Length: 246
View 1 (cartoon, rainbow, N blue to C red):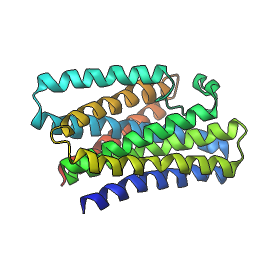
View 2: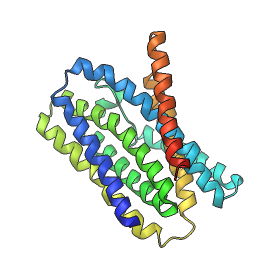
View 3: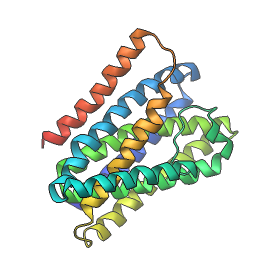
View 4: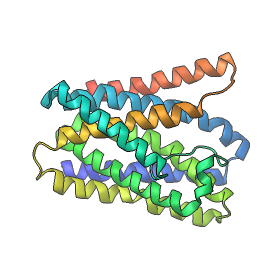
């Protein structure tokens, strides 16, 4: 049953994000540009909630705080380095600097990121079903704006729409590969789970604070600021329900 939940959760995230990315074909670009920041605000909340309300508390049940903190620090530094190598970096605009690195590099980075997401989902479900659902939901929530943004990048880079959608679909499947490998290997590596959760929580925090939040900076009306704050709170609230409601 746990294996089935892991596979379905990793698959649903990829399929749903690709399907929503495909709505770019039907939605006016201007409308999509205006909706994407709101999706990102909700995603920020889910990532912060999953890390601080789910993953870190679960890791701290097994590991002392004196161990969790250095693992978090190591994770943050690792993701900083990965970002500098243009592997982990997300872009939610078609004209940001990282896109000068071309579509193929973005493709590699997305495939790697989805693979890691799959491993993290497996590790969370092996800890508990409630944590697994929490992490899976957060992963889905932040995958959607990421995939939509990257789909727009491929279109801007000259890829045909059908090819861009196919590339998104292929990279999303790496999350299933990561989930399956994570299930078989992590279940045999007793004691590794809490370290993986703490390290992955650092990744969630880094993506939320170093990647998504900066996208939201800049001048905006008080109305949009309040809306974004409410969406961040909604993301945290949804995760809190999953983290404590099972």
